Image (cartoon, rainbow, N blue to C red; front, top):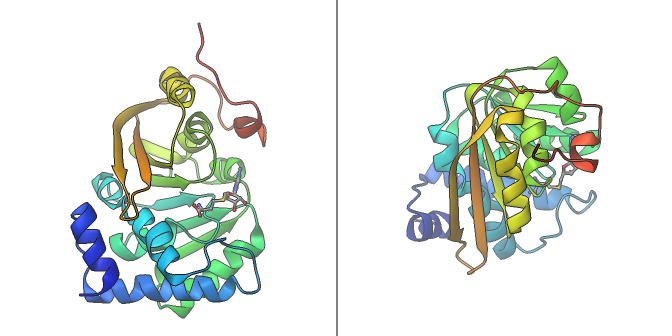
Length: 237
Ligand code: SAH
């Protein structure tokens, strides 16, 4: 058993087979290679990448597995985390979304290079524009290190089909952030399904929030480009 699969089993009860572990490590190495010429990640060592990219990405796996079958999208994917590791583990058709076109072009190359090109598509554009083109097409979405919970909820809602899930990766969300998110659930047609705190193998704390799409938002989404992140929705009195 390799280092990653041992660590995932011991700390998270998640099983990884040999083929999957090979693909996950191929991904990390390919991203570290691209990173020599393009700024995809600040994590430079393999050990750091195993914990902070692969282990962290895979903590969302049970929640993505619980979502209805169908298309998976990673919003603000950056260096392809958690999108590529979760594609490897779930076998779902995956769309990696980032407004920086050269990043997603590089990820498309990485996916081909490691042999999962057929399952990985990329979208080089804003999430708000994707929401107009692919309304209700996604069964599950993830987002890590992208925005506050309420911004993520607003951006994700129009993309999700009914009962689809949004899995949000957070380090240390403030109480304000959580309260605000809970206050706009009905407005955006999402409902908190699960809020789980845990530790990575290096002891750092994480929290995953899963929202379910319950129905149509009460306001027209997407709003104008940028508003979800610059002027987030607030609970209405
Ligand atoms: N998910 C990755 C990268 C996070 S950095 C990780 O956890 O390592 C956030 C990324 O989101 C950046 O690459 C940025 O270009 C992208 N991004 C921010 N707002 C966006 C939007 N509205 N639409 C598409 N991409 C966006």
